[in-house]
Image: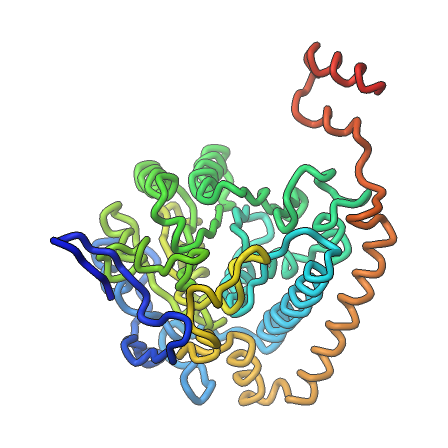
Amino acid sequence: MASSNKGIQVPTPRFRPGDRPNFDHLDVPQAGGLPKPAVDADSQNLKEFAFGLVRVLNHNHCAIGDWDPHLSSGMLLDGLKSMVLTRAYDNRMMKMQRTKRLSFYMKCLGEEAVAIAGAAALRDDDMLFPSYRQQGALIHRGADLVDMMCHCISNSRDNLLGRQLPVHYARKDLNWFSISGNLGTQFPQAVGWGVASRAKGNDAIACSWIGDGTSATGDFHAACTMASTYNAPVILNIVNNQWAISTHESIAAGSAESFAAKAIGYGIPGIRVDGNDFLAVYAVTKWAAERARAGLGPTLIETFTYRGEAHSTSDDPSKYRAQDEWKLWPLGDPVERLKSHLIVNGDWSEAEHDDYEAQCTDEVTKAWKESVSYGTLEDGPHSPVETIFEDVFTEQPWHLRRQRQALGY
C-alpha cells in the first residue's frame, strides 16, 4: 500500500496499531513447487527463483520436492535443539535487560532458522559476517553461553574487553566476524574475505546477513557490484523480516517484487526462500555454498520471515505495528514447524520437547549465575583500564604511550 501526492509515492504498511492483521494478500506457494537447478546453472536461467519461494515442509509437516535436503534425524535434532536453546538464551537475556542487569539486547524470535539452518549448511572454516539476529548461528557453532553473557555485561571475562556494545559478538576461533553497529558494512567485508580466500587457493567461503532495511544502503550495492565483478565465493543473505526498526519493508524494497530480484541486475542468482522452514533454508544455503566453492560465484538469498519481537530493547513495536501480528504470520513458527516434522517422522515427541525446553532453561539459568561471578554490569570488575591502549597497533605509537603514562599505566 502507498499514499501519494502528485506522483510522490510513500509506501505504508497494510496494518497499523489497532488493526486486525490479515495476510491473505501474500502469495504463499505450496511446498515443493520449485525445481532445484543444477549448481552450475547460468544465472540468466534462474530468474524465476527470485520471484518464487523455495519451500520444503508442507502443511502436513512432511518434506517434499526437489529441494528436500534429506537430512538425517540427528542433523535435524541438532538444528531443533540449537533453535530451542537460542530461544531460551534470548528469553533469559531479555529478562535480565528488563531488570537492568545488562544495558541492551536484541532477540531473534521467529528468525532462529534463518541463522541456524544457514550455519548448519556451511563448513566450520567458512567465515560468517553476521548482523544483529544471528546469535543462533554462534550457538550452533559451539559458543559457550557464559562467554556470550560475559560479553553482554562487559565484565572481566568479556573477550572484547568492553569495547563493543552488547550482542556485538566477535569470535575468531569460531570464524565469526565482529558485528558492526554500522549496518551493511559486513556485506562488502564478506566479499573481500571471499576473494582473499580464493586468491590464497582456499575453498572456504564467506556468508553474510543483513536486514531488509539495510539493503537500501550503499554498502549493499557496493558488495553486489564487487561480488559480481570478482566472482566472489560468497553468500549474501537479506533477512526480510518485514520491519527495519519501525520502517516497513516496502520502504527498502521500493517497487521491486522481491528483495531477491535485486540480484538480477548484478548478474547474480537471486533465490527467495521460506525463512521459517529449516529444511528450505538449509537446502538453499547448501546449494549456494556448493556453487561458490566450485568457483561459480556469489548468490543472493532473501529469507522471507517475520520479526517476532521488538527490533531491540530500545524499541516499542506497539507504536507502529498491529498487536500479535507475528502470531498470525502464515509461514508459522520455525521451531514448531521443525518440531512437528520430527514428530511426524517418529524422531521426537511433545514430551521430549517439553523436557528439552526445561533443560535449556536450566542451562541458561546456570550460565547466567556463572557469568555474573566474573563481574556484573553495575559493580564490575570490568576489563582493566589500561587495555584500552592495546590491540590496535603492532607497535604502540608515542602519543598512546604518553596517554597511558599520564593515566599511570
